[in-house]
Length: 364
Image 1 (spheres, rainbow, N blue to C red):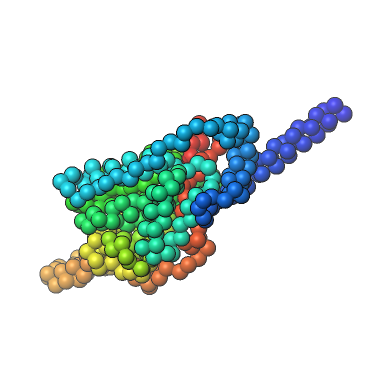
Image 2: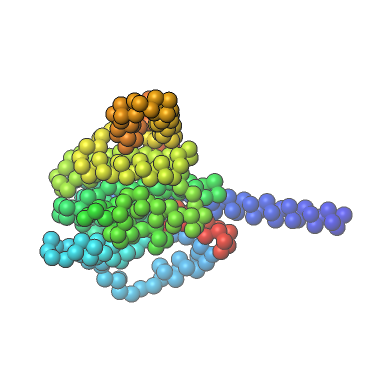
């Protein structure tokens, strides 16, 4: 009877602990968004109630912070990035320093509402609000501010680079602003992890830049699921067109990494040359199967008829040209359709930290 009672108490304690974990996870997954300034009292109360549930010293921490009366810290001043003799790397470093001065928002409440479907000129207005209020921001707000602060750098090519990663069955999203200048690539952004935000202007190709993020994800046991690249972002501050955030979407489940790198580099060359399609494309599977069959048939023809070896050169050249063309609708791509998994209504936020000890470190 004693052993039965002991097992019952242990089962009850385990059930209570499981309910508490589910409650904390539900609160953790809830994203609060502020949509007006000054911030309404109800928004503050929701934020502090979240702190009381999630933080180990929630109530004591709330009382300590809310009861503290002192001078407010000085507002972060945006850099004056003049078009002078300074190098592009130093200008980008100044912008990144400003983003880090704003700090990453760990409160669980987004202080700024960013609608990605708004025109570019309206997103720049949101960036001015972020600079004026000088509150902590997340990765999407950091991208908007970076776009605003690089508008006058006409020789800097910019496009949004977003990631979707998986860790222990949970999906996490992150976004940075990739830049290109002088044949080199880099990135501006903000994250919980230093390795998932700023990248200096030193990568020879877009695939090399993305590879650095892929390695950073692997260091925290995240696996990349999707890569999404926007169209080149205009330098016209009065542009009334929204940004095409998913000009190229690569789903990595069935695509080898070398093939994904080839697709990204091909797209970056076409985008900077102004010949990339404005319509979104989704790449779901490898594209070289048919090309490899064409090459094998060409080689077989050369072996069978050696005296006609000079004749198939035109076919080989055609195959080489086809090798660098983005996939057509009848092979591996299709026009982008808004679905539940690729919808822009999904929050573009950093990967959330995972629980479970030192070996279960989460990404930013």
